[in-house]
Amino acid sequence: MSESTDAPTKSKNPEHYSFMDRDALAKYTTDTGKILPRKYTGLTPMQQRKVSRLIKKARHMQILQ
Image (cartoon, rainbow, N blue to C red; front, side, top):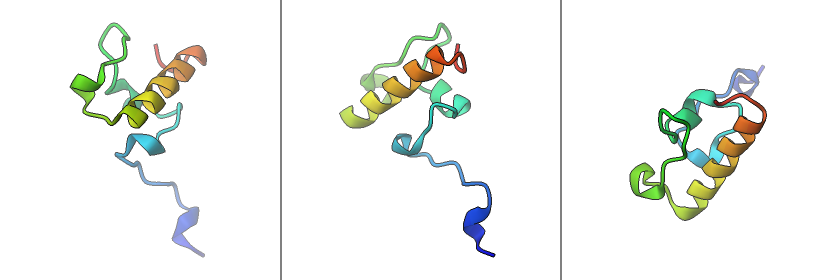
């Protein structure tokens, strides 16, 4: 039995997020649901684009509101 079959640990790297990670994506939105700009998140351009796409996908799936 390997330990890799256990639940995966939560990564702090935004590149490893999924659109199902509600709490992780909530850090990158305001109270009204707007996506925070890079100036405030401190992400690289590639990470910001990925997080934005994940937030939009989560909104569409009605996971994030």
